Length: 318
Ligand SMILES: NC(=O)c1ccc[n+]([C@@H]2O[C@H](COP(=O)([O-])OP(=O)(O)OC[C@H]3O[C@@H](n4cnc5c(N)ncnc54)[C@H](O)[C@@H]3O)[C@@H](O)[C@H]2O)c1
Image 1 (cartoon, rainbow, N blue to C red):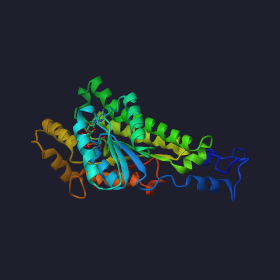
Image 2 (image 1 turned 90 degrees about the vertical axis):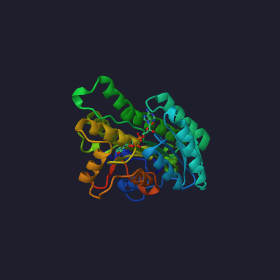
Image 3 (image 1 turned 90 degrees about the horizontal axis):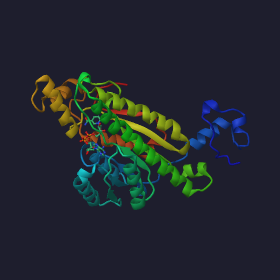
Image 4 (image 1 turned 60 degrees about the vertical axis):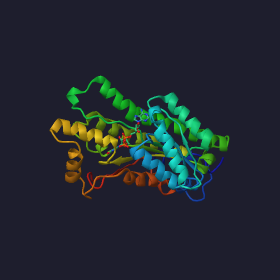
């Protein structure tokens, strides 16, 4: 029996679960050594899918990961095909050795998400990182929400992340098994995977008038934690990023909604919230978030899993 056999979680290790395994020191330290094995391929040989990449935070993430040496499959709704094509062109101009590919998919459709993952693997090769960034927001008091408002929010922001993580993880596990048939543990040591989702500061402290949005992002945090638990044995990590107030189309919509409710002109709500809430004194830009995702997608984050990291300039303190 190989000393790389996958063992149960540390707290459930018993003498019988380790029998037949050859340890140089003791079972616990051997288990830790196996978990510490490198999982991220070097720059230039990595592939990431980014959803919601046509604009805003997703676009900045795609460009940043390309600069980091990732080949990129950029995805968004079919209506955003022109923006995706322009992003692919921009990545080509970076002059790096990376490649880019656009594939439209609605993240609420498991079949479309599965096709997205297949198309990425067929075009760019094995998948290393899935950034489930696509999301929607809506400003509405809880008492006015319709069932359709509520289910649409959960369908895009929570089920969408789940379909992306599920399809990506299935692909990553299949890659491992193909690379090393019959020895899943050894294969996982060669290439793991990273699942990264868009949460929000409202996953820690909800905003009034963003009730169902807040609930959806709170769910993303929980979902990422369970993915981290269930997929650790495949060397696949799962984390989320939690931006604060980022100046994108989404905040334009929130600004308009809050302004409409509270009698403020366009642009005043984002200024008010930024001035009153952000310690660092400026509204966030998409590149602030892309920097954090760059870390989560890097080898430096190989030992980070099940976490949701806030990047908000100092609104929420954990
Ligand atoms: N802007 C912020 O302040 C902020 C703060 C916290 C979290 N976030 C989260 O970050 C992510 C990106 O936000 P953004 O500000 O760039 O938003 P955005 O509205 O500018 O971009 C979101 C993108 O997702 C795409 N999208 C929407 N529904 C989709 C679907 N069903 N399938 C595929 N693509 C879909 C849109 O077409 C759009 O291109 C979202 O998940 C958002 O909730 C944003």
